[in-house]
Image (cartoon, rainbow, N blue to C red; front, side, top):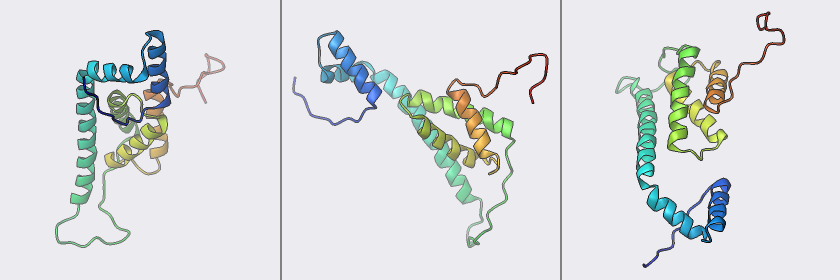
Length: 160
Protein backbone atom coordinates (compact mmCIF):
# COMPACT_ATOMS: atom_id res chain seq x y z
CA UNK A 1 0.00 0.00 0.00
CA UNK A 2 1.37 3.39 -0.97
CA UNK A 3 1.59 5.81 1.94
CA UNK A 4 1.54 9.57 1.98
CA UNK A 5 3.13 11.65 4.73
CA UNK A 6 0.72 13.83 6.71
CA UNK A 7 1.72 16.05 9.60
CA UNK A 8 -0.80 15.93 12.44
CA UNK A 9 -0.66 17.93 15.64
CA UNK A 10 -1.97 16.03 18.66
CA UNK A 11 -2.22 16.93 22.33
CA UNK A 12 0.50 15.32 24.47
CA UNK A 13 -2.03 13.00 26.12
CA UNK A 14 -3.09 11.59 22.73
CA UNK A 15 0.54 11.02 21.72
CA UNK A 16 1.17 9.24 25.02
CA UNK A 17 -1.91 7.06 24.46
CA UNK A 18 -0.73 6.18 20.94
CA UNK A 19 2.75 5.29 22.20
CA UNK A 20 1.25 3.17 24.99
CA UNK A 21 -0.93 1.24 22.54
CA UNK A 22 1.99 0.79 20.14
CA UNK A 23 4.17 -0.62 22.93
CA UNK A 24 1.41 -2.90 24.23
CA UNK A 25 0.68 -4.43 20.82
CA UNK A 26 4.19 -4.42 19.32
CA UNK A 27 3.40 -1.78 16.74
CA UNK A 28 4.41 1.81 16.06
CA UNK A 29 2.74 5.20 16.52
CA UNK A 30 1.99 5.63 12.80
CA UNK A 31 0.11 2.36 12.62
CA UNK A 32 -1.92 3.23 15.73
CA UNK A 33 -2.86 6.61 14.25
CA UNK A 34 -3.69 5.01 10.86
CA UNK A 35 -6.00 2.47 12.50
CA UNK A 36 -7.57 5.08 14.78
CA UNK A 37 -8.33 7.32 11.81
CA UNK A 38 -9.71 4.45 9.70
CA UNK A 39 -11.83 2.98 12.50
CA UNK A 40 -12.92 6.33 13.91
CA UNK A 41 -14.20 7.96 10.73
CA UNK A 42 -17.92 7.51 11.58
CA UNK A 43 -17.36 9.09 15.00
CA UNK A 44 -15.31 11.85 13.36
CA UNK A 45 -18.16 12.61 10.96
CA UNK A 46 -20.58 12.93 13.89
CA UNK A 47 -18.16 15.18 15.81
CA UNK A 48 -17.59 17.36 12.73
CA UNK A 49 -21.34 17.73 12.24
CA UNK A 50 -21.77 18.85 15.87
CA UNK A 51 -18.81 21.24 15.54
CA UNK A 52 -20.23 22.64 12.31
CA UNK A 53 -23.54 23.21 14.07
CA UNK A 54 -21.76 25.11 16.86
CA UNK A 55 -19.91 27.24 14.34
CA UNK A 56 -23.11 28.01 12.44
CA UNK A 57 -24.75 29.11 15.69
CA UNK A 58 -21.78 31.38 16.48
CA UNK A 59 -21.82 32.84 12.96
CA UNK A 60 -25.57 33.40 13.16
CA UNK A 61 -25.11 35.24 16.44
CA UNK A 62 -22.39 37.44 14.99
CA UNK A 63 -24.49 38.06 11.88
CA UNK A 64 -27.51 38.97 13.97
CA UNK A 65 -25.46 41.54 15.86
CA UNK A 66 -24.48 43.15 12.55
CA UNK A 67 -28.10 43.14 11.37
CA UNK A 68 -29.39 45.00 14.43
CA UNK A 69 -28.85 48.39 12.85
CA UNK A 70 -30.90 49.56 9.94
CA UNK A 71 -29.33 49.55 6.48
CA UNK A 72 -27.93 52.88 5.39
CA UNK A 73 -27.36 54.19 8.91
CA UNK A 74 -23.88 54.94 10.10
CA UNK A 75 -22.61 53.32 13.23
CA UNK A 76 -22.22 55.92 15.94
CA UNK A 77 -19.27 55.45 18.27
CA UNK A 78 -20.22 54.52 21.83
CA UNK A 79 -23.83 53.67 21.01
CA UNK A 80 -24.88 50.17 20.07
CA UNK A 81 -28.31 48.69 19.70
CA UNK A 82 -30.23 48.11 22.91
CA UNK A 83 -30.25 44.43 23.69
CA UNK A 84 -32.36 42.47 26.06
CA UNK A 85 -30.25 41.12 28.91
CA UNK A 86 -30.45 37.37 29.45
CA UNK A 87 -31.26 36.08 32.95
CA UNK A 88 -28.08 34.59 34.53
CA UNK A 89 -29.79 31.29 35.46
CA UNK A 90 -31.06 30.83 31.90
CA UNK A 91 -27.62 31.80 30.57
CA UNK A 92 -25.92 29.12 32.70
CA UNK A 93 -28.36 26.53 31.38
CA UNK A 94 -27.75 27.53 27.75
CA UNK A 95 -23.97 27.69 28.24
CA UNK A 96 -24.01 24.29 29.91
CA UNK A 97 -25.64 22.70 26.85
CA UNK A 98 -23.27 24.61 24.56
CA UNK A 99 -20.23 23.52 26.60
CA UNK A 100 -21.29 19.87 26.58
CA UNK A 101 -21.78 19.98 22.81
CA UNK A 102 -18.39 21.62 22.38
CA UNK A 103 -16.75 18.94 24.56
CA UNK A 104 -18.49 16.19 22.57
CA UNK A 105 -17.33 17.72 19.29
CA UNK A 106 -13.76 18.29 20.48
CA UNK A 107 -12.93 15.99 23.42
CA UNK A 108 -9.29 17.18 23.48
CA UNK A 109 -10.30 20.82 23.97
CA UNK A 110 -8.34 22.47 26.78
CA UNK A 111 -10.17 24.14 29.64
CA UNK A 112 -8.90 27.60 28.60
CA UNK A 113 -10.23 27.11 25.05
CA UNK A 114 -13.60 25.95 26.36
CA UNK A 115 -13.75 28.94 28.71
CA UNK A 116 -13.03 31.31 25.80
CA UNK A 117 -15.76 29.64 23.72
CA UNK A 118 -18.24 29.93 26.59
CA UNK A 119 -17.33 33.60 27.11
CA UNK A 120 -17.91 34.32 23.40
CA UNK A 121 -21.20 32.43 23.47
CA UNK A 122 -22.30 34.40 26.55
CA UNK A 123 -21.65 37.64 24.66
CA UNK A 124 -23.67 36.37 21.68
CA UNK A 125 -26.54 35.34 23.98
CA UNK A 126 -26.70 38.79 25.52
CA UNK A 127 -25.50 38.08 29.06
CA UNK A 128 -24.94 41.31 31.01
CA UNK A 129 -21.23 42.24 31.09
CA UNK A 130 -21.25 42.22 34.90
CA UNK A 131 -22.59 38.64 34.95
CA UNK A 132 -20.38 37.06 32.28
CA UNK A 133 -17.52 36.04 34.57
CA UNK A 134 -19.79 34.31 37.11
CA UNK A 135 -22.06 32.72 34.51
CA UNK A 136 -19.12 31.32 32.51
CA UNK A 137 -17.38 30.04 35.66
CA UNK A 138 -20.56 28.31 36.84
CA UNK A 139 -21.21 26.66 33.45
CA UNK A 140 -17.54 25.68 33.06
CA UNK A 141 -17.54 24.02 36.48
CA UNK A 142 -20.62 22.00 35.57
CA UNK A 143 -19.23 21.00 32.17
CA UNK A 144 -15.99 19.93 33.86
CA UNK A 145 -17.96 17.91 36.38
CA UNK A 146 -16.96 20.01 39.36
CA UNK A 147 -20.05 21.59 40.91
CA UNK A 148 -19.53 25.02 42.44
CA UNK A 149 -21.58 24.15 45.52
CA UNK A 150 -19.46 24.32 48.64
CA UNK A 151 -20.03 22.04 51.60
CA UNK A 152 -21.67 23.59 54.64
CA UNK A 153 -19.77 23.19 57.93
CA UNK A 154 -22.97 22.61 59.90
CA UNK A 155 -25.66 20.89 57.76
CA UNK A 156 -28.42 22.21 60.03
CA UNK A 157 -27.47 25.79 59.13
CA UNK A 158 -28.08 27.43 55.73
CA UNK A 159 -25.01 28.46 53.69
CA UNK A 160 -23.81 32.03 54.11
